[in-house]
Image: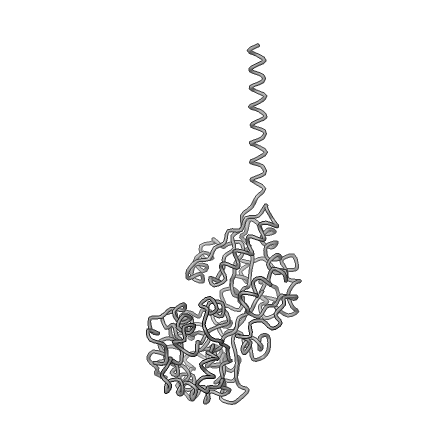
Length: 410
């Protein structure tokens, strides 16, 4: 009798152990991939998209990483060989090109959603004729403006730089608001403005790069071109909202949305942040004007662009995540909030985001030049040079600092 009881207990224990083992086997089939984002303003929408992906793919968990100063954090992690599985990294930048050339990313093909993109979407970002990115959206930089206040004051969108200067003078003369909403404590925020100053003065992307990075060491001169660029930076000097010197990006957006400033130099990505402030006026965007009508430009490149780390332990799951995000019905959710030009075929953009149409209408045209840092090894110090030139405009100092920045790259 005791033996029967013992055997029954042994059988029960064995069966229980079998169930536990099966449970553990099931758990081990579930994998986790990390998605590292550099789009803090789109965090809520991206999380919704991740949740939908996980519902469709219950064996895959996506760890969503969205951290302050994401660019610096990512560089540190890449240097420490701690690359996330899926990375939002900008393929026009030098760091991306270096990582790709060093084999740090996997090639991206149709299994990762490439077939969902418009023809030529990845062409500008090929490295050694191979593709390592899935560029889902593009950004563009320009000038936001308060349409209602412009109409009230009889102001018009400038088509030349001279008209831009006259516009600023009229806003200052009125005195009801500052000309610009600025964030001089977030140096990156005027990167596009400074680059567009060079592009419009030098006659385009190549003209600017010929002076800045393709020239010999010490070749940037205190000449008419540089003085014209400084003049455009000086247009911002003392023309920001109260507290602009210590303001961050969010502060500048808030100042514009509150009507404290009538223009905001910023990229299309800021539209989401402006809308979240629920401004009580209509706004639009215009391109950076050139000396002559028709000489205007916008600048930008891939924005929500995704790569897969070659170090990933789950490359197939990571690519599956990219393929999911690139589906038109999925990107529609992103576009309806972000509004940036998208490379995904089938996304309905008709009649949407009229606020940024003054700039986005030029996306993927010759008026939409790629960020100048696409040929640089770094860009952060250029941001600091920009802010210093706005605060204390001096062409001699600007030349000295630009040569010090670019010479080591030549």
